[in-house]
Length: 304
Image (tube, rainbow, N blue to C red; front, side):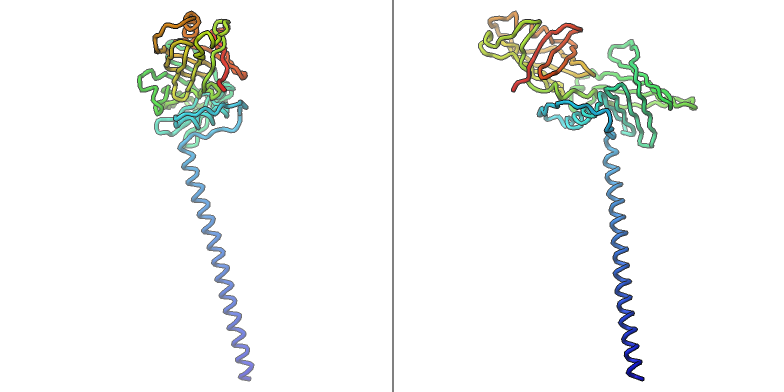
């Protein structure tokens, strides 16, 4: 009888130990799963906070282009390249920043605030502006109306890499609401990365430019839109200046350079007159062509 009792006792003790061990393991597994879930949630919140520092980049309206990997020291270059690939032509953020705006090449826009307000419009129309420094747009959607005003920053500091080229004011009127909400911020046009690099001038005003006429000084135009810098050689004199990008135009500032006298100065002068202080449109199909209105002013090929 004692023997039976002892066997039963030890059997129960073993079962209890196993149950405790199993329960302990089960509790540990549950605790591990809970810890992993908590850590995952924490990581997602951190990622969301990081992403909120920059406006989200939509995946639609992508433009397939052969982007030239032009090296630049401008810290904004990676962001600009990414936005250009997404079809964005103008990008702005609020002063806080508590909102973001993307204008697309397809004449649409996306606006959002950190409070969860979204305003998207598929048709953005330009408005006539009295001041040439201002650019105005109007966008209408089922949610309401937005008036956009861009004012160019023409101060000397506007050329700095950390200063935006435009201040922006948004006037948003939502349907069923009488009040107009005003948002202020800053932004820039997104430059076409294909334009960056060294371009050999092959024609100017339909005249073929032959480097052998200039003691083998190849006439060249070097463009760095991320830093808004321009430099080059007209076959005789070196020059430098400023250049900006706006939607589909290159806006050249006045240039400064050396003042040497050389043979064939008339061609060198035509080169400088073709772009200095002018706003020109362009096309790129391997080679680049600059236009003043419908007239070709210059043809260039990329330096290999």
